[in-house]
Length: 125
Image (tube, rainbow, N blue to C red):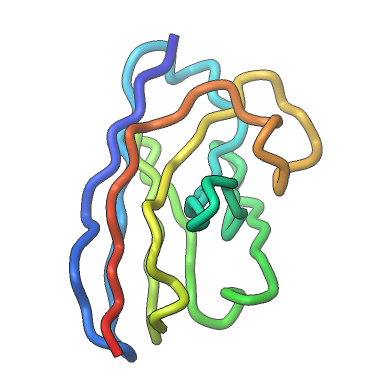
């Protein structure tokens, strides 16, 4: 089992920045990939960023490629999402997720085995 706890969400004006954190505990040695998924108003999970837990290979959605940065601190068992130039359309509950199998399609929700409880990001215009 892997437990994930997100933090760092909040209210920010358009153009501002936030850094989300996701602390992992439990069988962290089994983590292969980590991802961040905002939940859309209809309930579906979108994809914004993913990273290989060891090695740092990253993948981003085109809509955030020049604004968001995903990174890990393996000593702290934590993954971060630095979000710059935030826009109102970035408003969502952001979830981090862990893949312990090593699946290839990192942009797909079904790739991930464990999920955090989410952290709210609200961007005002």
